[in-house]
Structure formats: C-alpha cells, structure tokens
Image 1 (tube, helix red, strand yellow):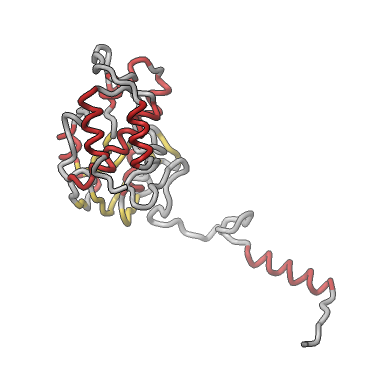
Image 2 (cartoon, rainbow, N blue to C red):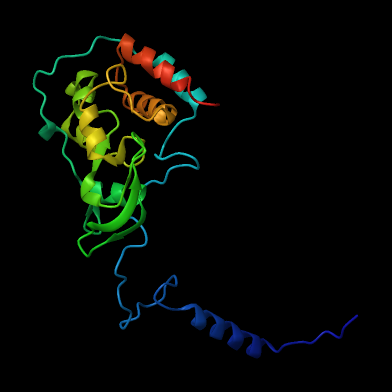
Length: 241
C-alpha cells in the first residue's frame, strides 16, 4: 500500500481558489465578459424558445404514429366552416423571438444546415432540404416558412372562435410541428388545402406529414372533415411503426 500524504488545509484551499479562478472567462457561469472578445460572425445557437426535432424527425413536438392514430380517432369530425371574416392579419406573424430574430429566421436556422446569420438575424447562407418535395436549396430567399395547418384551414376548423392571443400563438408555434421551411414552390402549391386536397409530392414525407398535421389539430382542438380524416389515415398507414 502506498504512503498517504497529508495536504495542509491552507494549501488545499489555495489550490481550490486557483482552480475556480481558472474557470472564469467569457463563457463560464458567473464569469465576467471579456471586453476584448470579438462577436462571432454567425450565430451558433437559436434564440430561446426554439425546439429541436426528435431523432429521425424534421419537425419538433411530433407524436408517434401510434399516438397520432389515437389522437386522430379522437378528433371531432365536422364540415369545413365558413371563411366569413377571415384575414391573415388576424394571425399575427412573424412574432419577435428575441436577439433580433423573428419566427421566420428561427425556423430557417432550426431547419437548415450550416446556417449563418447576419447581425440582424437574417440567414445569409446555409443549406435546406424541403420535406415536401425533397429539393435541396442553398438560398434562404427560395424557402418559405409553411404553416403545417394553414391559417385559413385553422379558421375553417375552429380558429374563427379564438382570441387574438391564441391565433398569434398558433401562427408562431415553435414547440409543435406547425412551422417548417420548405421550397416556395411546394408551399404555394399546397396553399390552404387540407390533406384530402393536397399531399406532399414526395410520398416519403407522408408519415411525418400525417403525424404533424394530426399533432397540431389535436393540440389546438381543431376539427377535421371526413375526407381529411380518411387521407390522414392513409398517410399514417405509411409509417413503419
């Protein structure tokens, strides 16, 4: 057995103080910012409030296929409501998310790869793969931020009775699979149509699309039509588990 060495308390205390001092710095908890540190040219992390997708998913807040089937079965079936009184202006977007970023820029950052942003939080470079059509894009201007459940579709299925705060939350929801960056062409092809009227051209996305749509509608207590429910069932049937 080796000989034990006793370290005087004063020496040990001094060593601990030196170790703590060595952890202080611009990134250390409680450390003072370095006045000479230069800000990074691009943002390495999104503003608070962003949510990351689970492994294998493109969108955050997705329920499993089994849970989606259960939720779909529980959704109220009703005819599509009227568009009377509808206006996109009643769904305030894009909301500010902090650090000069609005919802659009947060989603572009979240959904892209190697995304660099300028001092105003605008995406200046990066790479995005559109879920709907599988197209890869390297210019942010070519991407739209789609509402999974379109604002007009939300209005027809229950949002007409919401207050302004709930409509704003719906239009800027970063924690559920309601927002995603897709090609402008696919987004405008979709318009405000429900799944029975429009499906992503890339069938490989149908499982995620059906799960996402059902997650959002169930989370907000929105209704579905019979044809919509039938098509969502078809989409969920493409899931492997």
